[in-house]
Image (cartoon, rainbow, N blue to C red; front, side):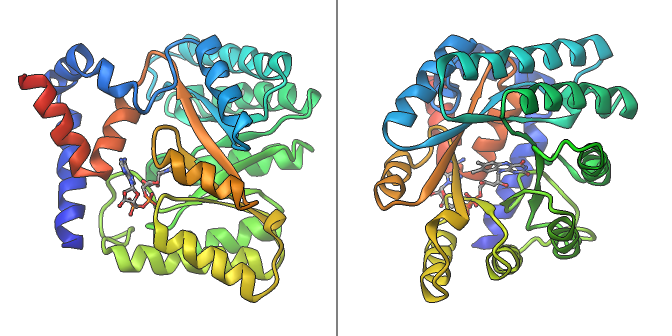
Length: 307
Ligand SMILES: Cc1cc2nc3c(=O)[nH]c(=O)nc-3n(C[C@H](O)[C@H](O)[C@H](O)COP(=O)(O)OP(=O)(O)OC[C@H]3O[C@@H](n4cnc5c(N)ncnc54)[C@H](O)[C@@H]3O)c2cc1C
């Protein structure tokens, strides 16, 4: 069963790379994608964040975009993030930002990417906000961690990143990041990775996920556990309760459009909960990763396309 789900996920991510599939989805799938995307423009996304805040849910805003082809696109995204940070400050909403390193030019020119992210981080620091570098597929893992370390060395400690439980290397990356004081979001991992570097079985991924969580909680290091998986959520709650770890020592994170009732419930129970709110016009890659995580989402799309 677990292997079947993994096969589905990998197959869908492969099909999604096909140009015709992309064109069809962009044409017919926009309305369905709006379940996972908070809007195409910033004002709408900020409005949604305000609504979440009313329920006690914090946010992290993601201006969608990845895998750009030219550096001027990266500069435009950098400027969009600076406007986003100003928008958050203007509206006084409880939100930080999440960005993708390839959106800032990582695949084209590492130094330019570093400078773009540094500009965003400096602006965030000047207004007391925080920047999370999402973790993309494995060719970018080292480069992403290097950028975060360089920024910390420059005193920009308002920058953190993400580690993926499915990568075999992650246990040692987690320990190093904890030693370096780098704030982490812990996730299972959303990309297609080979078995030589990534666990393929759900139970192995869950085991490493729990190990990463324990490494943080045992040392009192603040962490973000990003999952919709009830078993992991229950594990964190129980572990914290048994060891008298306060609810302020960690936060849960979930994606916009997923388990919204559970997000509100966690807030009501006094847990810190942050919703990842993506917005913008480049929604296709983000959307296909969400489809790949749950077969039922794809059937919904196909039913609507053939109606
Ligand atoms: C806030 C946040 C930030 C993330 N950032 C990154 C990142 O930077 N890099 C990265 O590689 N990955 C990232 N991810 C994605 C993550 O790696 C997983 O792919 C994703 O969260 C699904 O795993 P899960 O832990 O929710 O557990 P799963 O076992 O996949 O899901 C548990 C249950 O949650 C529900 N569910 C999960 N996904 C869906 C869905 N798409 N549609 C409907 N129901 C669903 C289902 O009921 C499912 O049974 C992020 C996830 C979150 C929540």
